[in-house]
Figure 1 (cartoon, rainbow, N blue to C red):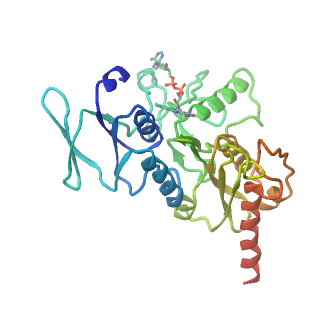
Figure 2 (tube, protein in one colour; figure 1 turned 90 degrees about the vertical axis):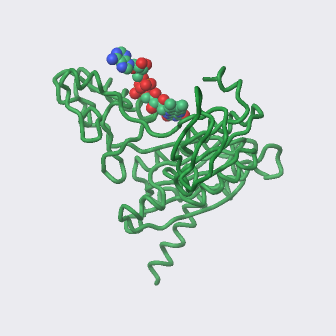
Figure 3 (cartoon, rainbow, N blue to C red; figure 1 turned 45 degrees about the vertical axis):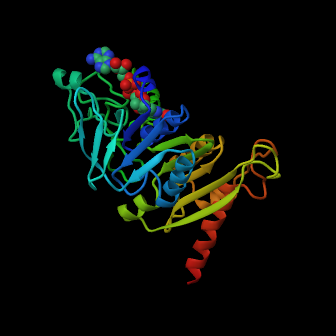
Length: 318
Ligand SMILES: Cc1cc2nc3c(=O)[nH]c(=O)nc-3n(C[C@H](O)[C@H](O)[C@H](O)COP(=O)(O)OP(=O)(O)OC[C@H]3O[C@@H](n4cnc5c(N)ncnc54)[C@H](O)[C@@H]3O)c2cc1C
C-alpha cells in the first residue's frame, strides 16, 4: 500500500474514524494532497462529543488535510484504476487513489465451521470468564463478543487494549476459575494524535450518555500540562468529565492536550472501571512536577471534577 501511495499525488480517504484520521495526517506529512470524506457531520463523530471533534477538525485542516463531512461516497469509478469519487451531494473529486477506511467485522469463519456459537452481531459468544459455549474453548479479541461496561449493551469495540485485557482474564481462568477475576464489560478507551495534539476518550460521551437515558452533568476544565505554563513544550490540557447526576459516578471522560493525554485517558478508564465518584476524585492525592505535569493547584482532572461538583451543589439548591 505504501509503495503504491508513494506514486500518487492526490489521495481520497473515505471514513474519518481513528484510522482514516491518522492515515490522513500521516500521508499529509509526505506532502500529498489528502481529502478525507466522512458521512457524519464531524470527524471521529462516533467517539467524541461534537466540540472535541470540531477541535480535531481544526488541527487536521490546519495541517493541510481537506475535509468533506456530512456527505458520503456514492460511487467510485475509473478505467483500469479508480480516478473519480462521486459524493452523495453530487460533487465529483478526481483522485489518484482511494483508501476505504470504514467498517469492520469479526472474523469468525473458523468458529462457525467448528459449530461454536456466535451472537447476533456475528461475534463468538463468551461469558465473563471468556469461555465459549463449547467446553474447553475460550475466545478473546476482535472475534469475541463484547458488552459495554456502562450501557451493558452488546458493543463492537475492537481494540488491541481490549483484546489484551480479555486475554489476561482468559489466562487467569484457563485452568481454575477465579470468581473475582472476570471481564466486567468493555470500556472503550481510545487515544490518538493529530499533528502534535492528542485526543483521548474513555467510557461514554455526553451525547451517548444522554441518548442512553442517563441523567448527567459534565465538568470541564482547561489548564496547562506543565507549570509554569511558560515552560518550553507546555501544552493546553482540557478534561471533560461525564458524571451520573444521581450517583455522582464518573461515566466517561474526554481529554485534549499533548503526549500526556494517552496516560490521562487511561487514568479516567481506571476511574470509570472502579466506579469512582466526584468526591473520590476531589479527595485523590496526585503527584506533580513542573516539567512533567500540570500544577497541583490547577490539575485539569481534579478541576474538571470540581467544576462538576459545583453543578451538583447548585442542582441540590435549586
Ligand atoms: C490500522 C489499525 C490501527 C489500529 N490501532 C489501534 C490502536 O492504536 N490501539 C488499539 O488498541 N487498537 C488498535 N487497532 C485495533 C487492533 O489492531 C485490534 O483490535 C487487535 O489487533 C485485535 O487483536 P486480535 O488478537 O483479536 O486480532 P488480530 O491482531 O487480528 O490477530 C488475529 C490473528 O489470527 C490470525 N488468524 C485468523 N484466522 C486464523 C486461522 N483460521 N488460523 C490461524 N490464525 C488465524 C490472523 O492472521 C491474525 O494474525 C488498530 C487496527 C487497525 C486496523
